[in-house]
Image (cartoon, rainbow, N blue to C red; front, side, top):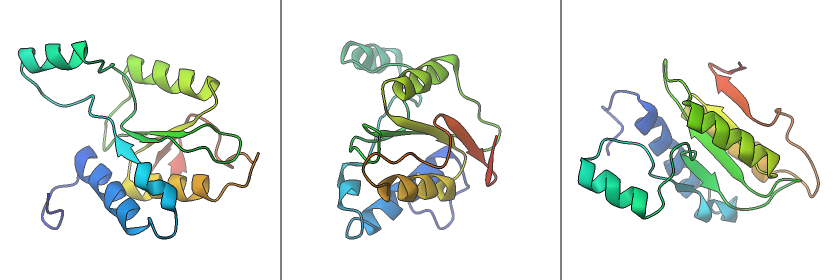
Length: 143
């Protein structure tokens, strides 16, 4: 997708994060494992049924970096945009993953997600993020 003329949305924000990650692999080699988990989107009933049989789970976060840093086992980022709100299944997933030792957060912009990724990737062994686990970042603030 060419982002130059695209209207901003959750998709364009997430694409911008992935583009930043691809550009930043030389500085943070772990970013080669940052990936999107395709749980959302519109699908016909047959495709949705097949994906469910294949193990797609409601609530799983959009982005995953399955690489340990600091005291955490990995990182999950739920992307939202505008007035988007977390579904109950997403809240449950984030809570469960935080309790399992991952760092999780919800970001409403690519800039916020990149900030979280950079801070996470800079953590020294055993260190904690300055941001509280399972926080939501919107408009540059923790909400």
